[in-house]
Length: 394
Ligand code: FDA
Image 1 (cartoon, rainbow, N blue to C red):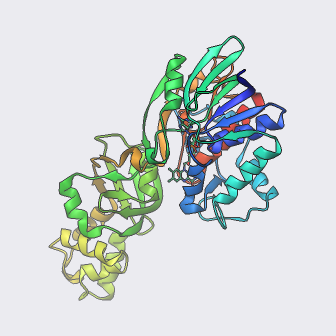
Image 2 (tube, helix red, strand yellow):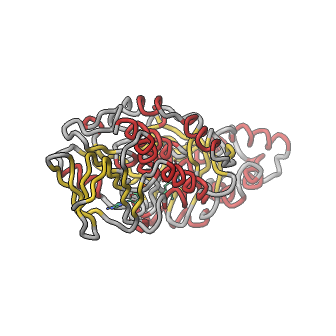
């Protein structure tokens, strides 16, 4: 006799575990399947091991989706504050790092332990190292065949297997395969929150800058982010680049504004007044990391002693630092991307329950849906919110 559950959740990540907690609390028999050895592996490695579990400012504007309104209902019904209340109930200490980003004081494992203890309290079952071979509709729900060869019957199936990012950690395209199988539309996927690469010529020129970080504003069309910029041996990274990478497309140009709070041309004019004998490179070193100052000074051979420079030269130096246009060659891809853009087309899902409109009993939550948050705790908040509203509907 096949085992039977009200709900089978595929994927024990952030979204799947939250959904199991809600469905279990509402008296449903719940089984969570995951092919990994441990649940919540992405939670464990997130935020440098401290998990940036939400953002106090999380709202619809922080998400990319073909339908920007889709997130509204779930975020309103299970907000950042709701998750903070849960974290507080478990006595997990946390702090705001910057820009509303909340991190555990101790370890991301505290969040995993919290979710597992909540699952246990509502008797939601978790079975690890169990892959999913097939999901078929049946007379009274769904039949799931697992990698152990077992057939399990479920009234409802929740697909919470995440996106394609970091295949080394067990990411698969299972959610997209299931969506295709049930004739649901998909929005093309691409790596998001990912470092950008440069063509070999530019990379060689920027090689001396590898390892340098600086405050920057990165612009792409009308979108811009002010955070740190990092030069790497592969290209550009740092939070500001990761943020803009979700908007960037092949062939597009981005603009780097380094030290966006400063007016570098004015700073150089003031330095000239104070000490005309000073070299431009030395004056720039008061504003920028030394190697960066040298790099920009060398770009302008006419800019030697401050006293010998016209305002026009200062404007040109400032423009190269604060209106620096670069056409990235590509991105580092799913290997290092924090998230996957695109996914299950939101027009196929009910935004209040995450149920597929054309397949009663089939739900999609978390990263596999065409909803992608900014860097800064927004992606976990989407996992909690979509998981919670789905669990409420099961
Ligand atoms: P998630 O990927 O977490 O879970 C999917 C689960 O399904 C996994 O346990 C996987 O093993 C399982 N699975 C996949 N295929 C399967 C199959 N075929 N059969 C069975 N099981 C299968 N976000 C944020 O808000 N704050 C942060 O600090 C970070 N930091 C961060 C760091 C790094 C390095 C990465 C890669 C990502 C982040 N993120 C983040 C993003 C965040 O981790 C991500 O958005 C959520 O984990 C998505 O949650 P899901 O539950 O949807 O998928």
